[in-house]
Length: 236
Image 1 (tube, rainbow, N blue to C red):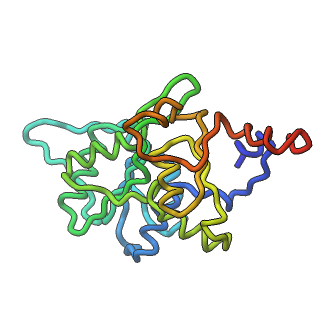
Image 2: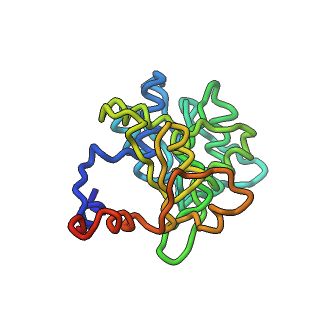
């Protein structure tokens, strides 16, 4: 919200929907038992959303400094009451977290495996791309030999909340984003018009390349290009 406001755009907290929120809501609408715990590979935001939804989260940043003891007589202990593992972007991912998540998913009966998103990379800094949540999700997939429930884009799970809250038909919406395989695919899956901006992950060469089969309705260099179409009287 502060980021939007610093750009001169009036946005409130309840107008922002994140994949962390979607993960917590997925558990809630599927009647995940309150007494079950949730192990998190990810940031504090996931733990906060789980808490808001009434769930107990484990792991997250707190496990960032922990180490797995690989001695031959060591038995790695994990909480048997964990009923779901949520994996998102985690700059402090380590072997301890991977083992904890793996044991929960493989050994706790019925344990769910939920991914906030599977973005391969992201612009975590201004100068370069960094591994995204998809990297962490792939590690858990490999260790557990299971595929996750993905609640973030391009899954349309969050669209259900948007439709309920704002009472707008998807045919009246335009999804704006900088990734073909998440943002634009999300819009297409939901029945929205789509606008790709080339100021982020996807480049013009990638969009026009022969291997790409995700075509947005519109594309432009950056969101501010829209102001040029509206005329000078609409400039911020």
